[in-house]
Image (cartoon, rainbow, N blue to C red; front, side):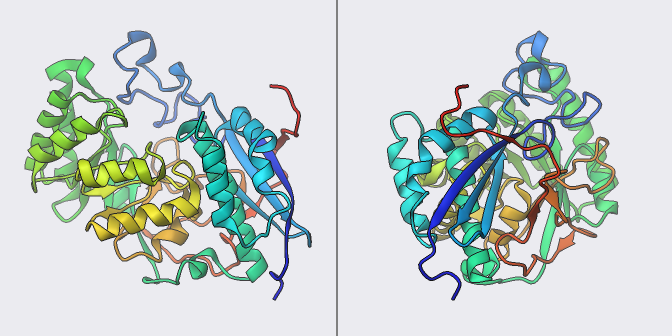
Length: 397
């Protein structure tokens, strides 16, 4: 087999400015940039747009690994120049010269070696990108799709919900549900809460009772506000309320779940990392659905462990975004019944590639469905015609 004895000969890190994994790097006309409740909404000068506080500052990170026979694999996430520097000046030693088959050892060594300054954030993004690149490479060496290496499919097609401001349009496009970005947070007071509830009622009427509706609260709420929004949304048969609090505020998640009971699902984990963080969300907070992003939580190697822990506790796993990388995971798991599609068209009125223009032939759902590619690795090709800014070993930032 082509895999036998293959070593990692090289690792390369690139930054992409504009588009790619940093999907917030859009014009101010784009819905994902316009006013959405955030942790920064309490400051008037950072309320009108999300780019005002630098949500797009980090840019996209691309990591490419090359085996000694010239076969390459790549992973994409956010983290930009800081993450690229870490890849090339610290984490590279745990990859280059190592057996291409030993992904677990590489992950464990990268994580342990960065504990004193890492564990979450940019460091975990860098580890995630390397891990995804290694899985992509291994699949290409074995001539297998990643999902086959994870144990094979449990479903032939993925079923999608859409994230964006127009769930009514998403229903017309064949999606089974829509997740609405919350515009008004605690700083908008009861008037803002009323506007949110009015929007929820309008969308429920337009979409009907057989369509899933959810809130994306993006870490913006306090417990009092979240409880009020939760109760009103439960009355409108919303399916879940997502990521209400600071990711480190496990206590508010716990208290909200206790208040919600079985009326509505409480979800989170988009900005959590590692099995240890998710253990808190699963065991202590009792969240109904966990939402790891495979590009941020530690890559596929860590997502497998997080997902197995969730399954053992009877929890659903609905990964955040991350396109083709999460598709290969979801198609293998019975407790991942739906998949997220970020509506990246400026008005959320059509399906467009999430990672544009970085991937050639990026898979996208049609009528809310998608069959995961049988091509080796993650089944996508890096578009090197796009400007990739290489960060080399020894580069001073």
